[in-house]
Image (cartoon, rainbow, N blue to C red):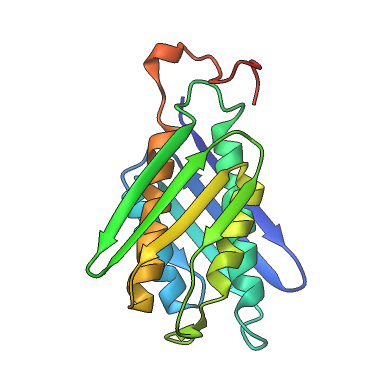
Length: 196
């Protein structure tokens, strides 16, 4: 079974298409109109071993908020669709990612009960042209639509680029672990409820 999904969402603010394949090789084709954001999503795909196609056309003449948040919404919807009923997956994942002076961690529970803990602070309001406050918006939208209970924390670091990238890579590695099929489950759902 190929675990993949394509979602298209069009509003007055954005027009977004995402194709996500869980059992991929990390190939990415990402175009959001925001260079640093593209870099983060490409890194996410590479380290999650998820094949990812993202096309975002947004109202960048206003600012980047709608494009970033709505991309998170559509990526989360594609993840959830690709997971189906969440059966057979390991469900939990975690990762610590060092990047030079920075260390960040992420923990994921694919429980279909979305929640975000975001313990990440930035000294700078921008990286490149992108507002750093938008990264929480993406993680929140992705977790909310994808059914993730997600905890992300930067333990220490100074370089804003490193902090952000280590958070994306930590999520990627944690998600890679959580979406893996656990052969010991025999296709069952990893819950005493029998459903997620």
